[in-house]
Length: 254
Length: 71
Image 1 (cartoon, rainbow over the protein chains, first blue to last red):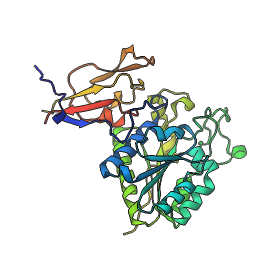
Image 2: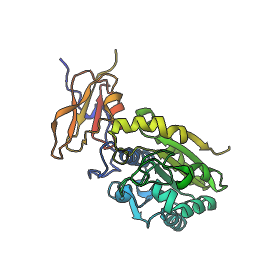
Image 3: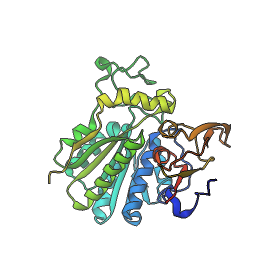
Image 4: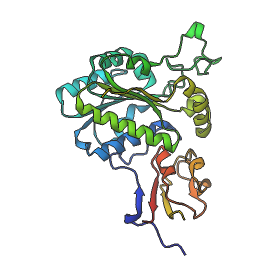
């Protein structure tokens, strides 16, 4: 009956060539892979593979430079926005992005993040927020929710002794230097498509030289949360999204 | 009638996370009983009802799925 549909003219989706063929080291079901892929697809669709420079962070995504087939550099822990600032000022015609997790961007790199955004550096910051330090074994991060269990808060985060979770994206949106700030997720096909549109917009805004763009992606950490990938995505919907609501936080006023 | 489609799964790269399975509108994909060289139960096609909607490929963290759809 069915003739073979697997022909080049029928192709509707394949892995973008901006991603290398290396097998990613991320845990099964981790949102990092999806976030990498949509960022690579945006670079591919805009045809800016040769004009893009990325800055990898410290954290789970420390090896991001192995997966993007663009020029990349590694920054010291939390310092990616500072390194990206330097690169963008030396090469003002290039597209520069940083890719950071919540431990990198919201804990050790808070100063660099806030000041880069306040100066309005024309870079794109992709911020992956999974509420935990995934790489080092699931310790509590600044973004860990109240009552959320981690290896250093085994009875759940207690606000009195451990402080409040940090909404760094809202904080950055208050700064005059930020231009486009949004929060997305990558756990369903619909949310992936939306997140991709947001990243594409942010990439395009860079050429306007109007300020920093930050795209937060609320992600799962199924290993750190001790759940299966599907359970982790459900838990994220039920618990992370009420505190970290999805949507645009700061949009450019035309 | 919906257009017919087909997928190709890169079984060596698949980590068997199963994130794609609930998003298939026609229940074409499932985690199979076999394991790949890393020991993951990789994704398999269980029937021929694929419409080439690309949902599975879009949500896959490891980009293991290539999608074809008749034109």
